Length: 337
Image 1 (cartoon, one colour):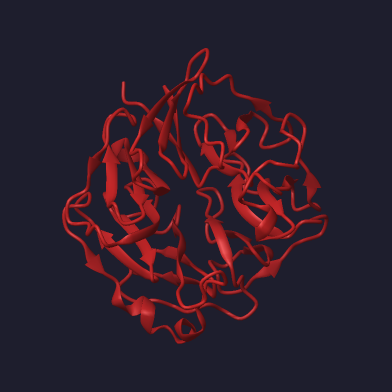
Image 2 (image 1 turned 90 degrees about the horizontal axis):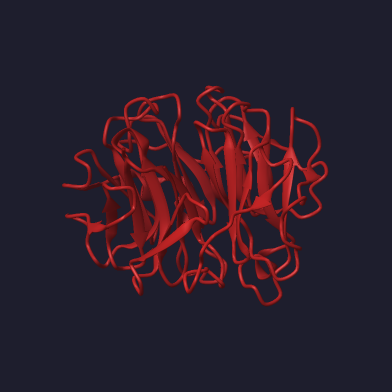
């Protein structure tokens, strides 16, 4: 059964497939911020703002605090790698504010900090514009093809990489994205890296060594979410706004979804989606087995079986669970059995 996890400002929501989809509410008041799924072990992780890291082993039906994670960690990103996804079996990465990376290989039993991240030359320039005295890890992307190669986005200032699971780090490269919000890799396109950034859309075909900024057709270039067709690495969907002040809050929000197929110019992908006005920026989750992309925002959840060409709203029994203030993260999980 498909389970769609959504992190909102108030709680973590587990939407379970059905007619209608049902909603279970978890971690109320614990400020969930980020999500990750370890497909090989059927586990899901949720990072919170100073309330620890939580894990579910039963399809999101219940959640337990992961040992070894300090309550004072302000967790802003989490990723889980597993055998078969190009990563060390059971590896979990946590990113925090201020920017730091912690890694566990024992399913979260013990943690070690990757101290080299803060020693990069660009670290002196990292700064989060609303609070320029700090910065944080916005996204962690374990490579879908290469073990221990992981890409990390700092908000704001750099997209960096490690080739050895965090023991050493390589700094941002000239011409690369400055403000990546979401990155992606693809199991069918080794060395390809996708970036949805505040400064536009970027692609690399050599694992971040060089970059191409591709914005033809993008009238709104503040990008947040990204989803790549699991069956076709040439088809990409992004969520966009004119800037941060019209992206995240329903009052005054105006957001869009764009699609690019076969490297062609971006076009609006709006059929079946709510109107831009009052709609917070969408976060995506991808069903790698079914080739389906889900988009979640304050208006609801939308499903596309054709990689973003058309969308349809899910029938969800929200009751009091609908994330009316917007969605911070989305992830897809298969319930065991």
